[in-house]
Structure formats: structure tokens, C-alpha cells
Length: 616
Image (cartoon, rainbow, N blue to C red; front, side, top):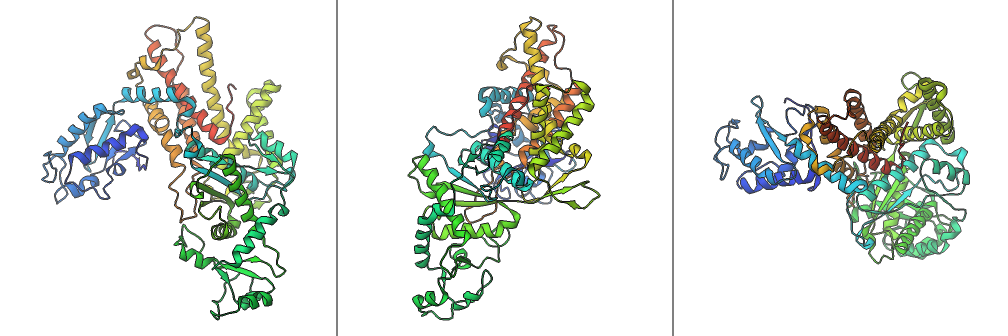
């Protein structure tokens, strides 16, 4: 194939309905055609490189079952094309139909080598429609619009299992900091997809609260939470467990704690006698519960080693797992109370953000909640599992070193960021303005470093002197956003001075003047699919499958790639030209493109809780 392509899986309304219109057209014109899985839109591929060849491609395999054997020539007639005699006629009809679409087709080309079809969009119309959408929606661009009635929205609770409440600032690890970042970012992504998110992060150390505030994270200062707060709930849980059909009544359990257990030796065992002899030692059969509820086990499901779990000790006191269940039930109660919700718990998504080492135990908490909690049993529950943070003096050559605290790591990155700017600007780097810039870039660098990797994978941080070069992703992105702000500020300042006329409305711009291939790439690869990206960060939620379908790394990677392509374009193309009449229309078109890029970047920063810089 002449271009590098990637598959896309998008919602019906993404790409301004282009995929949906494409599918509707083929369904209406080719009644007798069979297209593999029947989803024609999913068989059309969005191109990302060599866009001069086309923007989308229809592989020859799409038509394979609709055409005659042997492998046909697309230009020859096919008896299975109902009202149309040839594929070329079909494509001509497609082009004509697209005149009524938001994204219009300009032309198509059939590749003689492999008989694939390349489709090219009408670029001026695409610029006009997409940029108008950004101007109209502004901060809402990329977000799902929901009604004003909160009761119509799905609710979500983020359960951070990093146990931060009793932590102080000096003890917080980078792994725990990563869990906080994940919670905040996942919450923002879910909100952008129409969820109402409850994430009440509580800490007992004021210094830790202040450190988190520097990262744009709001944490409640709370000294009251303790096991005594859940005494009534624990009593209620114990009553339910004693009546639960999944209680395990095997005398041998008194000497087997947490492993695999034998089945009940007798169906007619005396339960009261058993409880007396075992001194209240109680287990629950999680495996049977999994099977009865047809929950996924094994790959992409619950751990295959889950069996029985101890919930009460020999002295009658509850195990930690019930305390965790109490906290979850309390979160659900507070969420419903704050929203005056009378809806069932089926409308609530519970997201467990958990370290890979505690994944097994958190799945047990999940199952016990489903089994005995009236408030949590019907909730949809998924688990976002994150890997460790590995520190090295040199990523490539030296073994692991102990991971420093989050506070010390911030100071290290800040000092490295300061040194980098001093090397570039010398003694000019001083004062409150530079201090604010360095702080903002340091925070961005750390967030991108800890969020830019797929959550389940480990994060490797370089503690060497040159480590800042490996974590410059965030600082590079925020720097390029500041360049856009500076560019637009210079233009508006020139307008006030009378050097330039005011920027015309986007509807009056001639976007056919944007002829640079990079300009189309910025629109087609970044501005246009941004809304689709935000939606694809949250995959399909399967209530029978605990594995997270939330992709926490995509926004960071998107911003890094956008910044790289924008920086390349910005270095090569002079946007603010001389105020000559024949140059102004092109400058106006480019300024509208720059404003859209800036808006997309700021909207993405909101999802990361990063405050953009207005200038550098």
C-alpha cells in the first residue's frame, strides 16, 4: 500500500458523521453485498501519513465477498452490485452523495497495485467546518454534551486504594503520586464523557495537602476517618454474612488461612456447632460466587486463583477487607445523598485505582462488595491497575536504585529545569515570573512522566544529571502552548496599534489558501479527531469484566505528538506577515488554525489538571 495506515474504531457521530454517512450509503446502495462483519465503516481506514495520497482508504478486502472470484478487477462489472454496475460507478455515486455531508469527498483514486481505493476530502470545506465547530464550542470541544438534569448522568466513584489518608508529605512515594495523578486524570476523562465523578481524596497531613495543591489536585484535610466510623456497617455486614449462602462451613478452615480450601465434608453440618468450635472464624466462597454470576475469570477477567477469603477472625473481629467494603459503601451513600439520587446502584461506575501488587486483594474487595453490600452489589466495577515506578541513575546502564520520595523528586526535577533554562537564557532567569514558569514546567514534566506510559506498565525515571532530557515531554508541550499564546498576543497587540486589521470571523475565511501539507496534517491528525480521542480513552464498560478499559496515557501522547508537529511547522512557516493586502487572507486563515490548536491543547490540559502558560 502506498501509505502507512492505522485502523480506527470510533463512535457514530465522530469525524462529523463521516463514517456513519459512509456506512449508510453502502447499506442503501449495495443491498446484496456482504462486507465481512457487516460494519462497513469499521473497514474503512483513516490514514495518518502521506496524506497527499488520500485521507481514507478502502482496502480491496472490503469488496472481496461482494465481487466475483478470482480476485476481481475493481473496474470490471460485478453481478452482485445491486443497482450499480461497477465499483467505479459506486464510488462516483458516493462522491455525489457526500456533497450533503459535513466532510465532503473531493475525489477518489483506485490503486492499480492492490486495488485499494483512496479517498481524499475537500480540504477547504473540512477546514471551514471543523474550525467553526471549535470556535462555537470552545472549552466544550471534545466533551460529550449532557443535559442539565444530573439524574440523567451516570455517576462514578474513584476508589484510590493507595491508602493515602495517614500518609505524610515526606513518606509519599512516586508510586503513590502516580496513583493520585491517575485518579485525577481518569476522573476528568470520565467527566468529559458525561459521567458525574465523585473523587473525595482525603489526607491527614497539611503539608501533603499543600504539595498536592501545587500539582493542581484538591485533597480534603480530614483527621476523623477511622475504623470506629464503620461499626454499624460492620455489624450489618456480619449479620448478612451469617445468612449468606456463600459462607464456607468446613472445620479444616481453622488452620487454612487464605489458601485453597476443600468442599464442605457434609451438607448436614451443624452451623451453630461449627461457629462455636471455630470461634467465629468465617470465610466466603468467592469462586462459587464468580461462577454463579458468570463473571469473567482468567485473561482479562478475575484472577483464576481466587477461591475463599477470610472475613472474620477467630476472636470475632472483622478483617481489613470488610473495612474497605465499608469505605466503598460510604462513598456510594455520600454520592447518592449529594445528588438526591433515587436511582439504583446500576447507574454507578466504581473505578478501583490499584497498584499491581494489590490487584488480587482489590478484586477480593470487589467481589465481597458485590456479595454483601446492598449499595455496591449492583454497581459496575472496573479496576485500573498501575505498575511500579522504577528509578535508576541511568536508565540504560545501571541497576535499580531506591525510589526517592515524591517531594524530593519534585525538587530534583525543579533544579534540573532551572539549570536547563539558565543554560539557555543565562542571568535573565530570575524573579517571580521565571519562578512561576519553572514551577509550571516542572509540574508538567512530572505529570507527563508518570502518566505518559500505559497504566499497567512500569514507569522508569532517570535520576541522573541528564534525567530532565527524558522527562521534557510535559515541558515541551507547555512551552509550545505558550508559543501559541505569545503569537496570538503579538497579533492582537498589533491590531490595537493599527498595524493589522481585526481577525475576520471564521465563516468569511478562504481556507483554500492553506496549501501546506503540514497545515492539513495538523487539522486532520489532531484537531478533527480530538473529540474521538477523548471518547476512546474510555472503552466499553463490561460489568462482567473487571479489567479497566480506561486509557490514561493517550492524552499525554497526543499532546506530545501535536507539539512536535506544530513546532516543526512553526519553525518553517512565518505566520505573522507584513500587513500587505494580498498577504492578509493567508495570515488570517493560519491564525484561525493556530487558535484551534491552542484551544485543543488547553482543553487537553484541563483533563490533566495542568495550567497552561501564557508566555515564556
